[in-house]
Length: 199
Image (cartoon, rainbow, N blue to C red; front, top):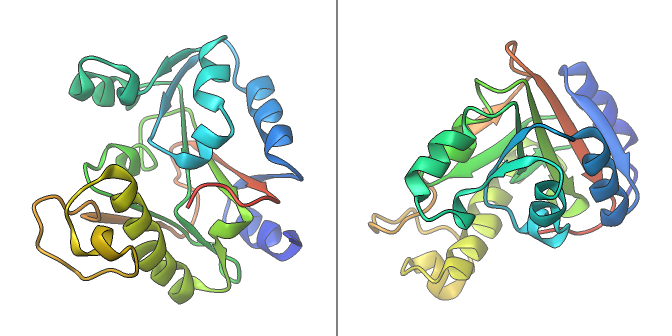
């Protein structure tokens, strides 16, 4: 995929952008630039596929609630790390909005304040032509697939076809964060990978 236009738009919006041809290249880059620090992570199939939870933990203090006995304490601790790492749920190519949808809110909240640097990692499948199509993808592709992966009982998980805007107590799409620009308080970098990664 040609990321030239998206890179320009994201940089105009204040983000640092790194383009990698492969997931292996992206993982090597992130392991090089994130070293000897405290790193918080959100749940991400992209990070999982890149094996970043294991590789970063080998030379950083990695805080990831899925690997903790006290999930809530780990979520809170991850919000105060120097670096936070997650995947974007969707990115609009024409205007550069970065979209995150969340159920608990720890992942989305960490993109707004508190860290020295936030890294969004995104495969080419996360990029949509514009904001409307990116938002549609996040709600009707990403959320249903994540719900099904988590084995929860929502209409979207049952069929994995679209958002039903349900009232299920297990609903995972409860909050939406849209980054129009880089937050003033911290560095933010988007690592674009020319492979399909995650949902």
